[in-house]
Amino acid sequence: MVNYPVDPKILQPYLPCRTELDSFNSVHYVSLVGFLFANTKILGIPFPFHQTFEEVNLRFYVRYKEGNQWKRGVVFLKEIVPKRMITFVANTLYGENYTTHAMKHNFTFSNNGLQVEYRWKVNNEWNYLKAIAETNLCEIAEGSEEEFITEHYWGYTYVNDSCSGTYQVIHPRWKVHKVNEYQIFCQTEKLYGTAFAHTLQQKPSTVFLAEGSPISVMKGSKIFAL
Image (cartoon, rainbow, N blue to C red; front, side):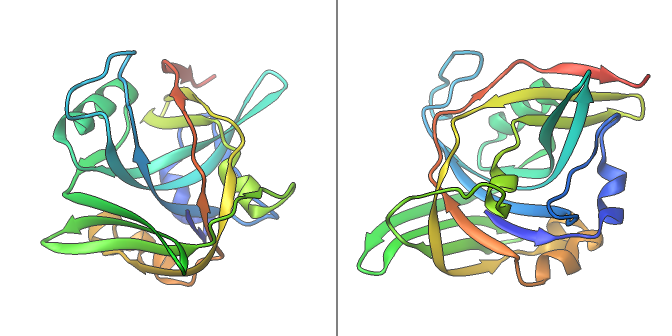
């Protein structure tokens, strides 16, 4: 999880109806995240050859107030996966912005620690996130940037100016591995446009490796403008 401070003006055009930008210590973030889906089921049904696959996404953080409760969540700017059927199903069921690229990953334990790598191909060139992390796990500190990044349990999508999609994501509180080294190569302008090129070329504020866990993505619903 690679996290960058971002000018909130860049995010405003992507903000779903009735949500507002969420921040940590008055700083707004976008995150470039690589992870592996494993034993995936769609509506409880496993699909052959579509159960284990990589994803790399770019996301930012929002919140929505329902009654007296704030529901903190994320908006995905783009989600990259290696299978066209996954792209079709996710875009159809959840209104997300999935796209299909060749992808691969590698996890290796060595004397240097846990080495994790995600790759995705853009115009015949491999982009990548690489990290070498400590093998031991740490609790996420209360009030930390890591807690802010990981403790969002809702997804929000832009439908139109008077309607947003929303769905709940359920998972336990994660632990993290401390990252000692990392490398990033991403053709940001080609993938995300000129608005995000500068943001994603600066040094990240934090880079960490989360343990991951079983996750349930619940059935989506709609939020309408008042």
